[in-house]
Length: 359
Image (cartoon, rainbow, N blue to C red):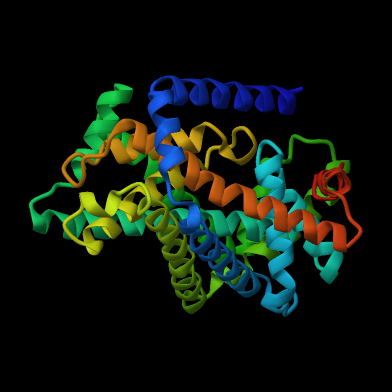
């Protein structure tokens, strides 16, 4: 019941945001802009997104290495299928499917694999926050305060911008700190969780103890400072490549002509990439439809001190860049499933069953 409620809330939010996005985007002018776009730029943008996926597979292999060494070549199709599922199914069910799929293919704990996927998400957020911080430090040297972006979002939401920044960043920073503490002190973590679970019936203790063991196994890489650094560094090319997708898609919309240099446009696109992906990490409709477009456009429009973009052009840009991220992954993922004689429905059912706790 709760799962269904979350599903419909996510769908409802996305439908509302998508409706607002389209209504406020001057649809007629947006369609005119989309007709005039040179779609030859889509091809290199798609290539860059697949490059980003390659580095995701490489980083995931590092996170899984303590359970079993798995080559990037073998992990790549698993990652693609997981992202395809996220693009088609609500509430990020692709994470469960990816964990189940790699567990079946490689004979490792599916629950521990799911924990590593959560760790990936935290590293993604930290990498994006790092990019925003770097821009905040260096962009003011050109006389353009990046805090204007935060102030603009604060004005639109009615939330003071320092509180908005804290609400976005502190959960990820806190999550990383807690995960590292859990990894460093596994015995104390186990004892604490079991102590908190004392009011539960005794029959749950053995099951809970097993879940704690698999959970801590997934966190094992976080015990090593060098590993933490390596995972953070490996997160950089993932998001540089994805920012390149935004950059390339912006060229046919004339964004390069609106900037003083390619470097200035790169700053804009990195900032839009970071804010959009942090904001759309909230589980919602399949692929974050509606939420992604809305945040991408509003972020771009909030960058008045950096670049002044027409609303209809920003709307068309958000539509195209999201299509580049969603559609090729769906097609490639489906090809991988067909060649492996698998179906998304089967993986979804078995993934939810095998990675869910059972009493």
